[in-house]
Image 1 (spheres, rainbow, N blue to C red):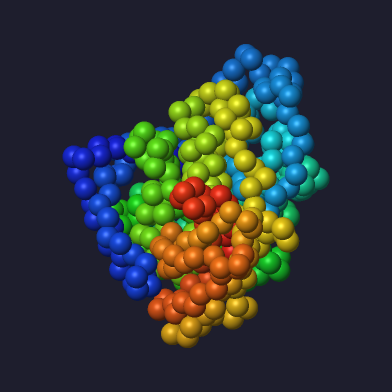
Image 2 (cartoon, rainbow, N blue to C red):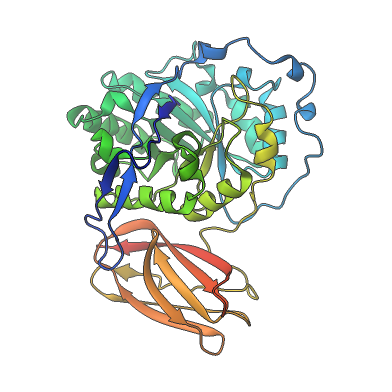
Length: 414
């Protein structure tokens, strides 16, 4: 992934995030400090080629001692891999075991930079690579950095990835598509056509800026073709004020995508490559984003190996995107079919000590209500459609302490 350096000059420049076309009563207007990129890193393979740190010479186990297997959790939290040679691991099998022991559920492997080129990126056809991660219990997805033009060759990478056994494909588009329309539509039409011929259930996602409005990125065009969006919400790169208010800025990113016309699920990518962001801040951002949140990237190749310590302290077992089991502090039940303009009724239970719950969708509060006899119920009418919208229920005690949260993905039909 081409990484960008962001200026975080909070208080010097504010850019308004307009609520746009989201549901009524859900979208307060807020000001956003400048998150525009000021430079870009080399995203190609050769930037750190053959520069493996001496400390990695022997065994993958030496990276972080004491790794233990963790329960799965109700999520698909992931990590991004640039290329194996930068990580210090001798094989994908060794890295897969490390990630599985840490608690990671999904790996995104780079397979192309532009068009299909198995000489430069043999990962695109490597069935043994895919098997190594699947055997460790991980989902395996492919990703590629893409450019305007050459659409057939770029779509061929998706076709090859599907044939190799990858379970999804993520297109990474950035500055080359700022302000573009025809080129963007042409590329994603090619991806969509290729996906139609891929393995059944094969997914197509897109990752781009966490602040698309500033880049004039037409995420509404992308929304027509993909199954989900993956904003690059690099709080660590943007600055301390963003890391210390993770929920606010993840929610702001989701709101911006929705205000620009996106209806598909929004799964944020968090940056953890500077060894600055804490595991607690990552956990907060993950809870605000949802079950398919991911972290850029597997340490190595210019990033401190001590990041593994932070990654191991992340709560990879957190339950996101589903109803908890019986006996949980708070539960939620949503109707099986929700339609724009028609009231939808939600209900749930709460354990002793919970006096009220606050319901939000995509970060917008839609209901603040008391709990009566261990239960709650409310109705809400949506004005905008969208698949994979995140309903969150937060349970509070009498002194205002948050006791528990539960999230569920809902589809609001036109």
